[in-house]
Image 1 (cartoon, rainbow, N blue to C red):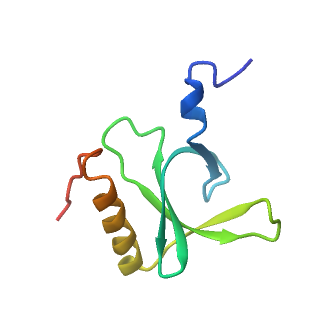
Image 2 (cartoon, rainbow, N blue to C red):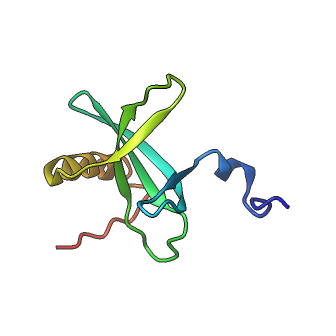
Length: 101
């Protein structure tokens, strides 16, 4: 049985499935690729979030296989903030951002 039978085809193209720290598969919607200081970062939105969700920002690293990329978490808050600010500026007309001060 096809598990994706209720998802429109165009949405499948923007979906990335990653494994979390427990080895469970988590589905994300790919929102953007941001370049910052010679590095690439992906901005992802968890598909399971029904409410306004928080995006996930991961650094793109080349893996040993040329056909694959790996995504690693970013621990530097300053870098995360810069990437998110670029993302917010690019998509200010498409998303309603909520500042959590």
